[in-house]
Length: 106
Image 1 (cartoon, helix red, strand yellow):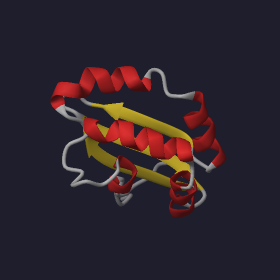
Image 2: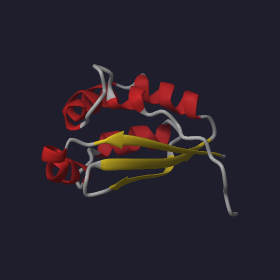
Image 3: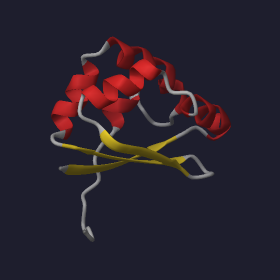
């Protein structure tokens, strides 16, 4: 199982709204993530907007491509794009650059 961690930056003025949106993720989005092989997926948000994402999957590139192929993800990414800083026109999913793991205690 591949462990993936990534960072994004939520706009300071939209943090509360971002939290609220994730308190009610669409059921079809949750189903698509599971079907695409995203497991143990968590988002952690610091008060300054630093967002840390973590997930486990067999193959991150394949799991991300599976989500890219869904209509629900296209709608979700379009609605979420305005919450983030420094995307340079990319969808939030495209800005998810995995961090290098340097230590793991199993």
